[in-house]
Amino acid sequence: VQFHWTAPEGGYRDFDHFLASLSQDKRKKIRQERRKVQEAGVQFRALQGADIQRADWDFFYRCYERTYLEHGNAPYLSRDFFHRMQQDLPGNWLMFIAERGGCAIASSLVALNDSTTGPATGVVAYGRYWGALERVDCLHFEACYYQPLQWCIAQGYDRFEGGAQGEHKMARALMPVRT
Image (cartoon, rainbow, N blue to C red; front, side, top):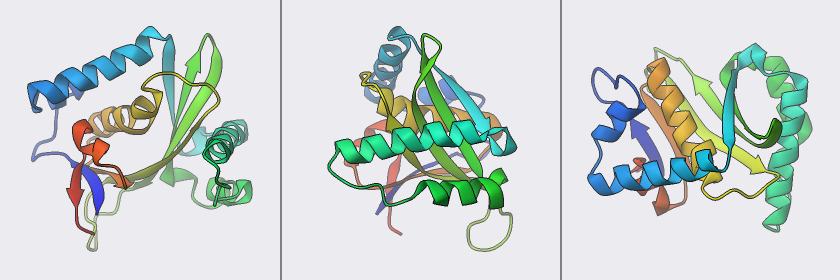
């Protein structure tokens, strides 16, 4: 089972339009979580494709590696892997960088597919890798779900596949899909 967000026929005008489609409890929870990150002074930059520079990839890897190590695991993807993705498939990546006080503190990475043929038709954003150098309440949800969802809505994407594990994703409008 993975957890996916799927846009309805015709999509959403914006993130608020999407929120209006949710139950009051889900809307309230999402707004509270987003407000905590905003009140902590965190802002995001979204970079796509060739706009993601080597320094951004290096920063992302530093965050990714640290977060894995903090949880007692070695990161399973190497810096060389991400270097190759930057070189060979630059247009297939979307990176969010969280900043506070002008300093980058966290990052998330989403794979993009704009296939219009085959079994996975439509434009889809896949999963996310993430990491943080600082702890900020609800930063994970903002970097890994809300920023990608807001971006997908703005870009007219059909689906965001948030990956496996975590029924907590259902409270954030990603529904279980048997895969």
